Length: 352
Image 1 (cartoon, one colour):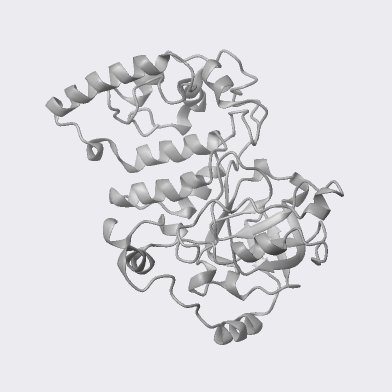
Image 2: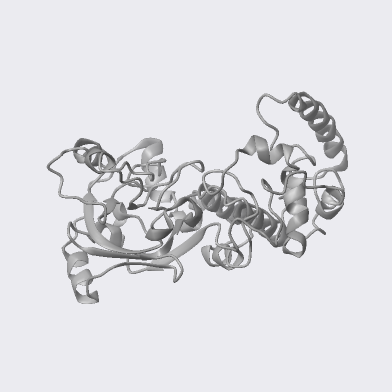
């Protein structure tokens, strides 16, 4: 969708022999691109970035893509914001009926017509005038594409979801934004208020989550602190927090879980991720206490802890910053210069 891959090669299954074809044709094209002096900066535009975001949303793709796309765009001097992501999410139907939002696998998606077929079905939501690595426009590359199984790649009149493949949340708990994949969550949790059960870091969570004495029920909201870019460090894929064993034994399969971490694109559940600013640097997530009521409202894009502004300010005044993770070397440079999730988690000195 960005124009960096030869047509038809974006989603080849691991065991498919077309990988050999892809390798040979890509190698030959790279040589020609050198002679043509065709560079990434010649292809990246605000419109091609929008194409990539729209594609991710139509796939109900990985929440990680939000961080990566923002970083990539900003390296190219293009301002991609969470607001733009959510604006595109509100107009883009989910067409890929693949897990965890849908029923099928990426292999099925490829043989149903693949990315070209889905892009063509998106129609005017994709800017086909954008240049690509083979010298043709995106529209020319997808012009003859077909959907061979419209249960796997849905038509726009029968989408998996009419919109909101990913959603950006805001509120007093995430003033700079947080994200959720609604299609991967139990719909009954899209609007939910529950009592917070707070873990101060991953080790605390791992030590106590399966303790039978843990005061938790299915309506609670699990909160993990210190899992962000600085606090973890490195914002690891801890966001699909485990459901306590005693609740699993009761048949509970989803709960609202909130963190400043990431999660894998194949993960599922009502997991709110990328909370910014992160807790380790004093974001509001650091101020949540056991028993606080937390409000999640995906349709209204809200994420709040239900305490007064005065109480939130009082807690902030009492908050004590944790000791730095590093005092020298690469780690020290990282914690000084890494940006928050809403800015792409890139180093500040690498963005334009």
